[in-house]
Length: 75
Image 1 (spheres, rainbow, N blue to C red):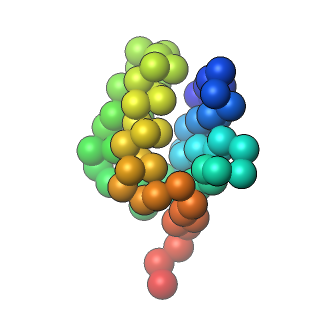
Image 2 (image 1 turned 90 degrees about the vertical axis):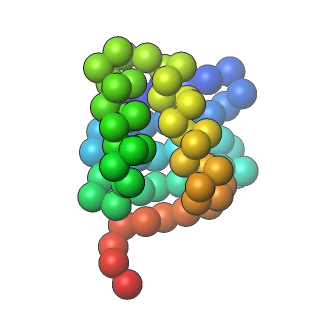
């Protein structure tokens, strides 16, 4: 699922979650590293085909991980 918003925010969820907004926000998290509550919220947004819910998840994720995050492997 991919959604674009008027403020330039783009959210894509197709396994990994990608959130971008110009140079201000750049978040990438592989699916296996998404917390269960976030994954559940993403699945509900997909089920409802709701960009509004997807945006809410993106805001929650950026509050947790910050505006710049790339989580794709264990250290």
